[in-house]
Amino acid sequence: MEGQEEEQKEEEEKAEKIALWLKKIFGDQPIPKYEVNPRTTDILYHLSECNKARDRDVSLVIEDLKQKAREYESEAKYLQDLLMESVNLSFTSLSSIGSSYLNALVDSALVLETKDTSLASFIPAVNSLAADLFRTKARNEEMEVELSKLGKNLTATLILEKCLREDLKKAELHLSMEKAKVDSRISNIDFLKAKSDDLRLRIKAAEEQLSARGMDASLSHQSLMALSERCKTLETLYLLSDSREMLVSFLELSEVSALFVLCYKRCLTWVGSWVIFGNKNKI
Image (cartoon, rainbow, N blue to C red; front, side, top):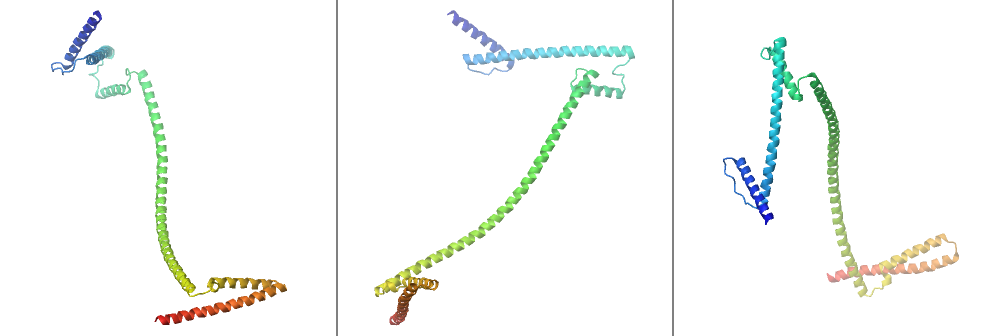
């Protein structure tokens, strides 16, 4: 029970702090409604604590700046009094050139972010600025070198691209010409194939007709051509050989070949007569 009472009391304190913080944030404006639960309470309490810590830090920084401003004002007043007492010189009594020089000195100190306008503060600041300038120039030179390299590479790339485009055009032209040639050859091949099929059918029909009329297969053109080739071979052997037996065999085969040649001629005469008289009979 005591633990629950302490937790409830702690939640009430958080809610009260949150309400005060929200009232401080929104001021006279109405506070937006929100769902009150442990999660939202913890989040708002955490935000309020962070905001208070930030306000404390800001107030400390402001106090520090005010303290420095008072110190600078005191030092400036001391220097003014010193100038007035020693040389009877004040800022208002300076000439326009002196005022411009003094303003330039102050502006330089502000730009260089020095703590004062003394020579001991200006020299390190100027040296640091010169070092930064040197590093910047070095980086610029490196970038110029890289830019020059990129320009050369870009030029080479453009030239290569132009050459590739020209080669591509030539290749496309050559391809179109070759395609036309291939199409023509394919057309010729198709024509020859159709013609070959037609001739094959005609030859087959003629062979069937000759076979139907009782023509001997040994009297066909192929058989007679094979026999003729054999006769030529034997004649060649006869010319190259001095053997009597080869001569006798050649003579015997020559008689046979002569007989077959005679039969072949008669067959051709018979076929021609049949074609002529057959066509006349049809007419």
